[in-house]
Length: 292
Ligand SMILES: [Zn+2]
Image 1 (cartoon, protein in one colour):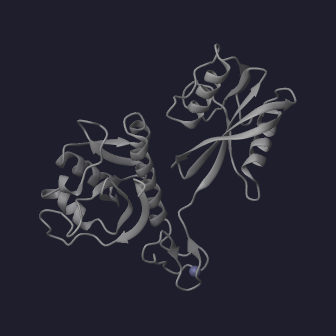
Image 2 (cartoon, protein in one colour):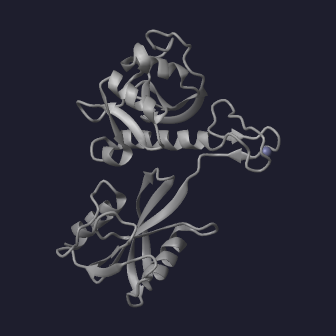
Image 3 (tube, helix red, strand yellow):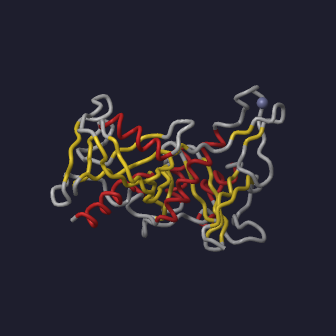
């Protein structure tokens, strides 16, 4: 089986008063604690592991675990169930202290944890957010219920389904005569330049989105659009689809509402760019390797 194996099960909490929180008949679960939508706890020494339930055997942290319900079983990984728990921010501080864990947010963890762990954490954040925001039907207002084994909040009155949301977005490296198009947007934190990106509109293919966004933001037509790779990004629920493309026609004319600056850069003259942890950084590395 693929590891981690992604699946979903809504589970009741542990019985109150459980001194050693081992679940009966299954390995000690990995626990991903989520507070304020983007905060988790990892063990402080490695900076790279989620705790297991056994890290909270007694005391205040165990009591917090006991009242955390429902639990979201989001995957199986290395032979253990992976449970996501939504906790209050204060509770998270208490749990971190009790189990000698370090509290960190998703963005800072980016540097320290594996892609598998990052994926599980992103899934935990999004599943917890989906559950918290789908308790009532948006069509008729009735309370929803989650069917066994499915990540869907179903309305018993009108059958409306709310799945966890995913918003596809494209990100594209456009190359013209050995130079890469890079732009700086006001929304970027820091002074770096990156490749163009934008959300896919309803009714649009991703390739159509690539053509539209590049034309809208930079006034250019592109050709030879090719899939590069993808990355999940849980803020709030993006799926970044990476592409490469070649300039076809038009001169650079930026949309000043979207971009502050854009230009063509050779592989040996790149401005500060995002790290390779992001798909934008990986696209720029691809350019450096193929056009350097
Ligand atoms: Zn309904």
